[in-house]
Amino acid sequence: MSRSLVLGDMLAFSRASSGDLEAWLKVADAELGDRVRSQAAIRGESVAQFVRIAVADFMAEADEEAWASLMSAVRDAP
Image 1 (cartoon, one colour):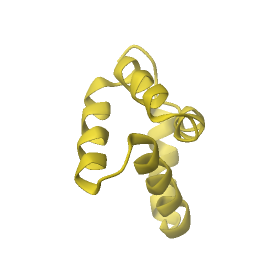
Image 2: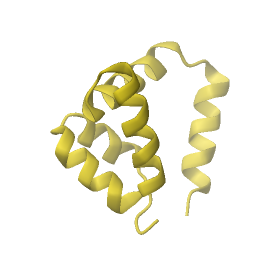
Image 3: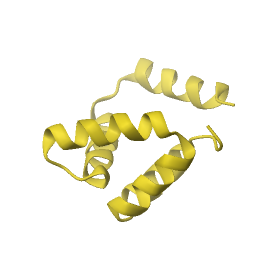
Image 4: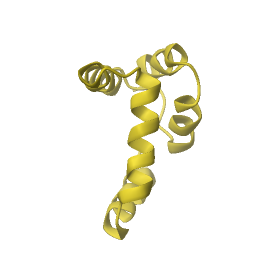
């Protein structure tokens, strides 16, 4: 991975066009991009739609433990 994934980047790109988000994912983390594209296709959504929905679901449904795990992962990311 040539660039660390940053939550702010994901949130900003989720509002961008799907093409912009996909291009960024190829550079930032190609494996994650492949997984996101695959899941979006299964659901009949664009990559941007999938990311927006995933972020909204997490924000609405995550408990304290899930938030703590996310913050730990962000803190420990290279």
